[in-house]
Amino acid sequence: MTKQSVDRAVFDNVMVPNYNPQQMVPVRGRGSRIWDQDDNEYIDFAGGIAVTALGHSHPALVNTLKEQAENLWHLSNVFTNEPALRLAQKLTAATFADKVFFCNSGGEANEAAFKLARKYSYDNFGPQKHEIISFEQSFHGRSLFTVSVGGQKKYREGFEPVPAGITHLPFNDIEALKAAISERTCAVVMEPIQGEGGIINADPAFVKAARELCDEHNALLVFDEIQTGVGRTGSLYTYQQLGVTPDILTTAKALGGGFPIGAMLTTDKCAGSLNFGTHGSTYGGNPLACAVAEVVIDHINQPELLEGVNAKRKLFVDGLDAINAKYGIFQDTRGLGLLIGVELIEKWQGKAALFMAAAREQGLMMLVAGPKVLRMAPSLIIPDEDIALGLEKLDAAISKVLASEA
Ligand SMILES: *Cc1c(COP(=O)(O)O)cnc(C)c1O
Image (cartoon, rainbow, N blue to C red; front, top):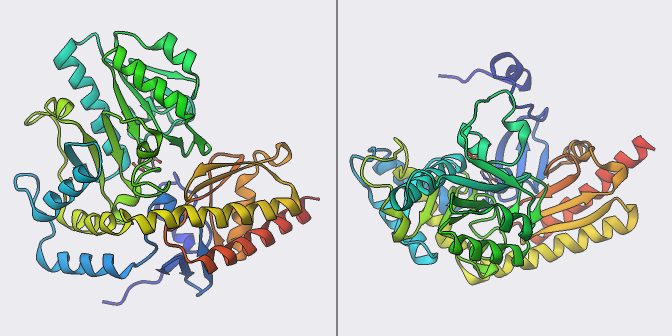
């Protein structure tokens, strides 16, 4: 069968308009380069939104996927399978966790985490201990429970009534957390770096205080590491460099390197509350996804790779500083490792998307995090020469935007 030819215009005809993709259609990727239908080349600083952590079509992932595809695709959770068992062993060996629940996305991992937090508190302390504390600007997914825990009102508006018992506090505000946490709190939920909210780092003192307050009030500390995990910040998970251990951690995005998978990690103490029949997912623990994720973890959880993340961050930060010395349009550089956010100066706030579009015209894919922050989340093994070339393209894009808006 020959495939029908399609282009970007088809999107508007047959897709629900919840996205507004860029005008070109990418067809091929290798490492940190992408080509579109017209064979234009792009440098990829976006990494599929912190997903393709080993770049595009990494040979080890391609081989694993092909090999698994020849053997076993799917069973359901009526049976377990070797890739899922191996991946769970690796994740528990590499982290605080004793137990793993597999699913297919970040939102689903958070859904499981929030349900577990409620169920654990219900089992051990009773139904009144159900309140979840979360933070303003946070992002935890698009299901009804996860948009409710998320701290961005625009994602809830029009979908009410939403689940009750959720409070949003200012991020990094120890006093506000002290005042709000109580015996009714079942969980405090945070991203170690707020991603969608604008690349806002959690203050280490705040994280430590949250851990202590959770302990005092028998509440669980939940880390959403969906964007910050799997080597992104220079350690396998970011909690490992904050000196604080959560009770539940969610991971997805880079875990499959581009193949859909999510996981919730937790301790023996909590895991028992998701006893037989309490939660589930048809595809969770799918052999194709777990086989790929196992190889992702093998490649990323290596000292040389993780050190490389910090070395590459330096190339980005130095390059961004040089660009800023020329144009003076950034006022802050945030994030850790290869999760990089630069905040635009007041004059350009609200216009981040303009720079993203200009970059694309120069052959550079990047991201924004809200209206005033440019975001980069490239492959953790992006070649240094691709970083240099991408930064040249960013420089050209910024110069064009400034010229056109002058
Ligand atoms: C992307 C993201 C999610 C949602 O993940 P999906 O796979 O899109 O459901 C949740 N939390 C954080 C911090 C994220 O960055």
